[in-house]
Length: 114
Length: 181
Image (cartoon, rainbow over all chains, first blue to last red; front, side):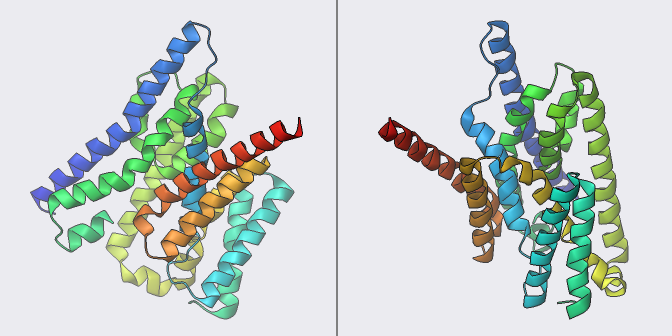
């Protein structure tokens, strides 16, 4: 890679770091200040909604297979059902993910790679 | 997206602006984790690793840990995800298409690991009608935007749509409860 790519990477790294760190520090100081004057420790409602909403949006975006087809969409549906069923049975993080991937794989293996 | 833009010789300023705009969604992650961090300067360094997946995991896990365990947990999660990210990238770079040709089912199957992970983290949040509508709305909006070809903005606008739905449903509930009194 040439020098301009490294420089671009550095600028993006610094910018992304600031995007992650500055809001955190602002909110942390705000919470500490409210804590010191005995007000309730709460982040603004809109931010507390956007956090989970962002995760939900990432789920929606990641559900679309890289090669959408009948097979991959059926496999996605099967994976979702297996993941949810396993979560409600075991209430853990890793087992539902593992079995969801297995459920997805079974459909791919049965119908062939899209 | 960064790799694609560099590979097509896009202007440097455009690569920087586009990447930072897409990474702009991380702006809400820090404030959501602020109640769970301490004054320790390690947190500043650890924020360098605050990816979407690590935020989703930390948002779920940090509230359940005692304060003194949080830095250690976050550091472990960050290093683990970095290690596998670098390993996967290196494998892809050195083995390239050969890996996909030899293990086509594996690469296709592993693509479902990410949505499965988000499903598991999100399910506990569906704990009321207003959150059900909010999160389902965000999922649906992002999914629709990506299907229509707006992949780069699907996450941000999906989240905004879900948040707007929260306020709409909350307002309707409030008006209904006032009318019933």
